[in-house]
Image (cartoon, rainbow, N blue to C red; front, side, top):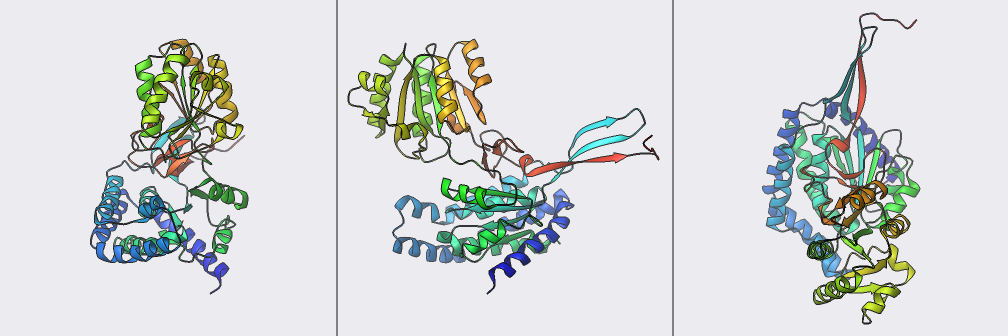
Length: 418
């Protein structure tokens, strides 16, 4: 097998398929999506048999319980994948939307129209459901997609892919509009990332190491977030009960996600009472708190934080805590150590709320709400392909609209430039 030859064929086929997918009607795309969902629910036994191969390999390789759980396919999880695809069917098709119309003095009619991006490469780890989720979102937006999952889920990914790709031809679409890289050889990723002649965008989903490797080696534009170092700042004018509930939810509702709070900042004027109460709440829930010098004076039992803690994405029940002397100090801390993901102020002071939202340069900036809402579904997008902390061309949760670009269509009556 020649990996470079195989990758070259895959990206060329994807480019060809993208032309047909780009002009497919909403009804055709939805029919393909419905068939994809049906194929998954009709092949549960086969999917679980293939998934069992990945689970046995994972156990043999000593993967953690959490990782094995993320890999596992059950009947209910397969049903959830199918339901997720059907949810995409119900979303509005953004392709063809007219964003702006201009009529120039010379009579030229200019339209700014939403169009597919083209060929999107998605490189991801662990969860087999990403195969179905990503393929359905890309198809709905008229894109061709090339999926490269992790080696730990290779059998599951290929099995899912074969069920969803076979749905394309039933409605007259090119089967190569959805492709999976079926080799676990790392060289395949290297060749993919250099295929800028055919591919238009790369979206990596996984740990920071994976994402940095993609960014450093890709000649194709990449949209990503490296990590989620999310902050909640409890202002001197905060409602203490609200602050407590938001902090607990931000950290504990699901600690292993990129939108969970990793650092809690507290104004020194309210730090004594608030920190005493929240320390008990967090400790009772099994959270290890690591505090600055001022925090440790208030709570001597707290473990001292070191410099690395302020930029750490723990993804577990660990929380760094810092007492600050002003809102400016809080904003400064976030600007130095944050990851431009999601940051919160808890305050009843409108001026401080505005100052925070104006000056904190993150994809999602909240006033009096949990960081855990940074999610495509929670934002009303229905689904997402990931979270971006970039500024070009998408930022925050990436839904269907973020998987499109635009072009200008100009109608004239023979105008020439003088």
